[in-house]
Image (tube, rainbow, N blue to C red):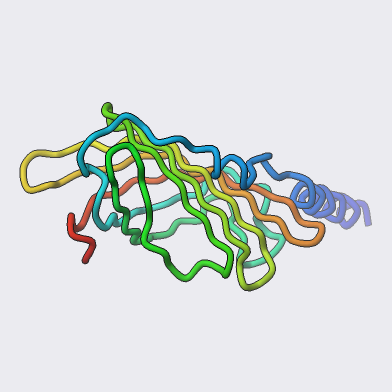
Length: 173
Protein backbone atom coordinates (compact mmCIF):
# COMPACT_ATOMS: atom_id res chain seq x y z
CA UNK A 1 0.00 0.00 0.00
CA UNK A 2 2.83 2.38 0.89
CA UNK A 3 4.50 1.70 -2.50
CA UNK A 4 1.24 2.49 -4.29
CA UNK A 5 0.98 5.83 -2.46
CA UNK A 6 4.58 6.73 -3.31
CA UNK A 7 4.08 5.85 -6.99
CA UNK A 8 0.77 7.75 -7.08
CA UNK A 9 2.40 10.81 -5.50
CA UNK A 10 5.25 10.69 -8.03
CA UNK A 11 2.82 10.58 -10.96
CA UNK A 12 0.80 13.40 -9.39
CA UNK A 13 3.89 15.60 -9.08
CA UNK A 14 4.93 14.81 -12.65
CA UNK A 15 1.47 15.74 -13.95
CA UNK A 16 1.42 18.89 -11.81
CA UNK A 17 4.76 19.95 -13.30
CA UNK A 18 3.37 19.42 -16.80
CA UNK A 19 0.33 21.52 -15.91
CA UNK A 20 2.38 24.48 -14.71
CA UNK A 21 5.91 23.85 -16.01
CA UNK A 22 5.90 26.12 -19.08
CA UNK A 23 9.19 27.98 -19.51
CA UNK A 24 7.60 31.38 -20.07
CA UNK A 25 8.39 31.87 -23.76
CA UNK A 26 5.56 33.41 -25.74
CA UNK A 27 4.44 34.58 -29.16
CA UNK A 28 5.81 38.03 -28.30
CA UNK A 29 9.31 36.55 -28.00
CA UNK A 30 8.99 35.36 -31.62
CA UNK A 31 7.50 38.64 -32.85
CA UNK A 32 10.29 40.68 -31.18
CA UNK A 33 13.25 38.99 -32.92
CA UNK A 34 15.10 41.76 -34.78
CA UNK A 35 17.21 41.17 -37.94
CA UNK A 36 20.89 40.49 -37.32
CA UNK A 37 23.92 42.15 -38.94
CA UNK A 38 24.79 39.38 -41.42
CA UNK A 39 25.17 39.88 -45.16
CA UNK A 40 24.78 37.19 -47.78
CA UNK A 41 22.98 33.87 -47.63
CA UNK A 42 25.05 31.51 -45.41
CA UNK A 43 21.89 30.11 -43.82
CA UNK A 44 19.88 29.56 -47.02
CA UNK A 45 19.14 25.95 -47.89
CA UNK A 46 17.72 22.71 -46.58
CA UNK A 47 19.12 21.62 -43.22
CA UNK A 48 19.06 17.99 -42.07
CA UNK A 49 18.84 18.14 -38.28
CA UNK A 50 19.18 15.65 -35.45
CA UNK A 51 17.46 16.51 -32.17
CA UNK A 52 17.53 15.23 -28.61
CA UNK A 53 15.31 16.38 -25.75
CA UNK A 54 17.63 17.19 -22.82
CA UNK A 55 14.93 18.40 -20.39
CA UNK A 56 11.14 18.13 -20.40
CA UNK A 57 8.23 18.82 -18.09
CA UNK A 58 5.90 17.27 -20.71
CA UNK A 59 7.01 13.66 -20.93
CA UNK A 60 4.59 10.98 -19.86
CA UNK A 61 1.52 13.22 -19.96
CA UNK A 62 0.51 12.81 -23.60
CA UNK A 63 2.27 10.60 -26.13
CA UNK A 64 2.67 13.44 -28.64
CA UNK A 65 4.55 15.71 -26.20
CA UNK A 66 8.34 15.36 -25.86
CA UNK A 67 9.98 13.42 -23.06
CA UNK A 68 13.58 13.64 -21.85
CA UNK A 69 15.80 11.50 -24.05
CA UNK A 70 13.49 11.56 -27.08
CA UNK A 71 15.48 11.76 -30.32
CA UNK A 72 14.39 12.77 -33.78
CA UNK A 73 15.33 13.95 -37.24
CA UNK A 74 13.98 16.88 -39.20
CA UNK A 75 14.54 18.57 -42.53
CA UNK A 76 13.93 22.33 -42.58
CA UNK A 77 14.38 24.80 -45.44
CA UNK A 78 15.45 28.36 -44.58
CA UNK A 79 15.99 31.47 -46.70
CA UNK A 80 18.32 34.22 -45.52
CA UNK A 81 18.32 37.80 -46.79
CA UNK A 82 21.02 39.80 -45.04
CA UNK A 83 20.32 39.63 -41.30
CA UNK A 84 16.78 38.27 -41.68
CA UNK A 85 15.86 34.61 -41.72
CA UNK A 86 12.62 33.14 -43.07
CA UNK A 87 11.39 29.57 -43.34
CA UNK A 88 9.48 27.67 -45.96
CA UNK A 89 6.16 26.83 -44.31
CA UNK A 90 5.44 23.25 -43.41
CA UNK A 91 2.55 21.24 -41.99
CA UNK A 92 2.20 23.26 -38.78
CA UNK A 93 -1.28 24.58 -37.97
CA UNK A 94 -3.53 27.27 -39.31
CA UNK A 95 -2.02 30.27 -37.50
CA UNK A 96 1.71 30.23 -37.97
CA UNK A 97 4.47 32.79 -37.63
CA UNK A 98 8.23 32.52 -38.06
CA UNK A 99 10.88 35.16 -37.39
CA UNK A 100 14.67 34.87 -37.39
CA UNK A 101 17.98 36.71 -37.38
CA UNK A 102 21.53 35.87 -38.44
CA UNK A 103 24.73 37.69 -37.45
CA UNK A 104 28.10 38.05 -39.18
CA UNK A 105 29.76 35.82 -36.58
CA UNK A 106 27.42 32.94 -37.52
CA UNK A 107 25.18 33.17 -34.45
CA UNK A 108 21.45 33.02 -35.07
CA UNK A 109 18.10 33.17 -33.33
CA UNK A 110 14.80 32.08 -34.74
CA UNK A 111 11.38 31.42 -33.35
CA UNK A 112 8.01 30.23 -34.45
CA UNK A 113 4.57 29.67 -33.04
CA UNK A 114 1.48 27.90 -34.22
CA UNK A 115 -1.93 26.81 -33.05
CA UNK A 116 -1.67 23.16 -34.00
CA UNK A 117 -4.65 21.33 -35.42
CA UNK A 118 -5.02 19.23 -32.26
CA UNK A 119 -5.67 22.34 -30.12
CA UNK A 120 -2.15 22.75 -28.79
CA UNK A 121 -0.51 26.18 -28.85
CA UNK A 122 3.19 25.70 -29.67
CA UNK A 123 6.03 28.24 -29.29
CA UNK A 124 9.72 27.62 -29.95
CA UNK A 125 12.87 29.72 -29.75
CA UNK A 126 16.23 28.52 -31.11
CA UNK A 127 19.67 30.02 -30.44
CA UNK A 128 22.77 28.65 -32.10
CA UNK A 129 25.64 28.97 -34.52
CA UNK A 130 26.22 28.04 -38.16
CA UNK A 131 29.71 27.49 -39.60
CA UNK A 132 30.99 27.00 -43.13
CA UNK A 133 33.04 23.81 -43.63
CA UNK A 134 35.23 24.29 -46.65
CA UNK A 135 34.18 24.52 -50.26
CA UNK A 136 30.93 23.65 -51.95
CA UNK A 137 28.69 25.42 -49.43
CA UNK A 138 29.02 22.74 -46.73
CA UNK A 139 27.90 24.07 -43.37
CA UNK A 140 27.03 22.78 -39.92
CA UNK A 141 24.59 24.04 -37.31
CA UNK A 142 24.47 23.61 -33.53
CA UNK A 143 21.84 25.07 -31.27
CA UNK A 144 19.40 24.80 -28.42
CA UNK A 145 15.64 24.94 -28.88
CA UNK A 146 13.23 25.96 -26.12
CA UNK A 147 9.70 24.64 -26.69
CA UNK A 148 6.44 25.42 -24.91
CA UNK A 149 3.15 23.53 -25.29
CA UNK A 150 -0.17 24.86 -23.99
CA UNK A 151 -3.65 23.38 -24.18
CA UNK A 152 -6.48 23.55 -21.67
CA UNK A 153 -4.78 23.16 -18.31
CA UNK A 154 -1.46 21.87 -19.71
CA UNK A 155 1.51 24.25 -19.84
CA UNK A 156 4.76 22.35 -20.27
CA UNK A 157 8.16 22.89 -21.82
CA UNK A 158 11.17 21.11 -23.27
CA UNK A 159 14.80 21.93 -24.05
CA UNK A 160 16.16 20.31 -27.21
CA UNK A 161 19.74 20.00 -28.47
CA UNK A 162 20.08 20.45 -32.26
CA UNK A 163 22.93 19.48 -34.62
CA UNK A 164 22.80 19.34 -38.37
CA UNK A 165 24.30 19.86 -41.79
CA UNK A 166 23.06 21.75 -44.80
CA UNK A 167 22.00 19.22 -47.39
CA UNK A 168 21.43 21.68 -50.21
CA UNK A 169 21.90 25.39 -50.78
CA UNK A 170 19.00 25.55 -53.23
CA UNK A 171 16.36 24.15 -50.89
CA UNK A 172 16.07 20.58 -52.20
CA UNK A 173 17.30 17.41 -50.54
